[in-house]
Image (cartoon, rainbow, N blue to C red; front, side, top):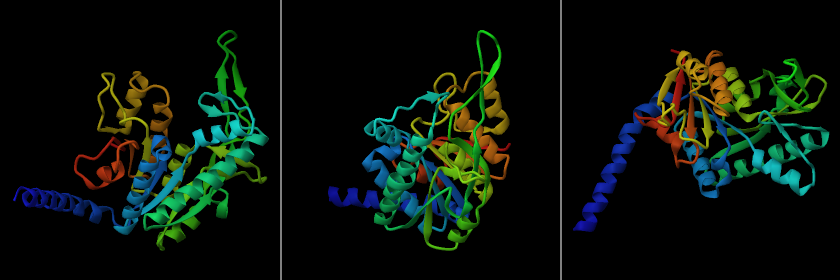
Length: 301
């Protein structure tokens, strides 16, 4: 009797989960969700499989997910194997001609294909793209400056073939929305002269979310979300509050550019952005289909 009782309780709990999720499934049906996928979630085989199943489920319940992936650790490993040295400046990889070829090979080839295959195995239908396909991402060279501490003179940093989106043409993604295919995009762009650029995946995800008018931009990270000065999770904030947290030093390091990406996306038409922990199984489903959500949600006001 105990075993049957336990089984019954498990079924009731599952029914409760479905009941809670159903209104959210209806709310987001037909909406576009842009997901930046990277970090530990992409490097762990179990989490990668769960991610593929979750993306497939999102598509199957009527949401249109678009995946933009990173690949920094994999690029670093390939450069090391090929004895190509590289360095970082302000968190960005200096990308010379030899390095950009490796970056494109790893992102558009190896990693993109792995994600597409994983989604296909999970029962979905994925299609691999890069920003170079169908003119999706027109890039321009990223300009960064640094102030010399001795002379106080601002100097221009040359990061090589590191770019940023100049424009996004969403026609190919709009066409795929009417199909069963899930776009998986490598963050590579090309300028007007045909030069290839390596672009930060968060930045690409934000630009694509803006171009599509996405209902959500999800940035999967290796942290719980945005933390306050006491190390506690901030579950929700407005754009104004986010700017305040940057000004008072609550936000530091790599979280600042992520928040800036979220703010830029929201101010360009994205309904809301979420920074969430990709190490937590099914964190995307918890965010989209439960009342309490997951991570930190940023909204306009």
